[in-house]
Image (cartoon, rainbow, N blue to C red):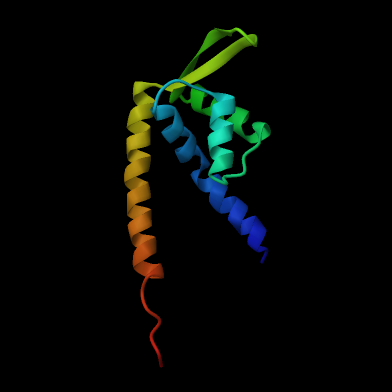
Length: 113
């Protein structure tokens, strides 16, 4: 089994949750999302982020608006929809349950036989 592949799969599994969480704080530009995800060592590239943002938009979880930029072409800013906020709440509840369950298992002392 390859450790790196497993680590990548773990990150992919929570990427949507992290992106929705970033967007929930207010309108955000995709490159700012990339910067925050990279700083958090989520190792995301544009080729991963943009298709995911499109899926989230098509699912009605996020919407965007174009904003003129002084330094180039217009920028697309994302925000959560009401459905997206409800979806994120459900994911947050699930995340808390998973963290608690994982901690319960991983924090248990090893039994000496």
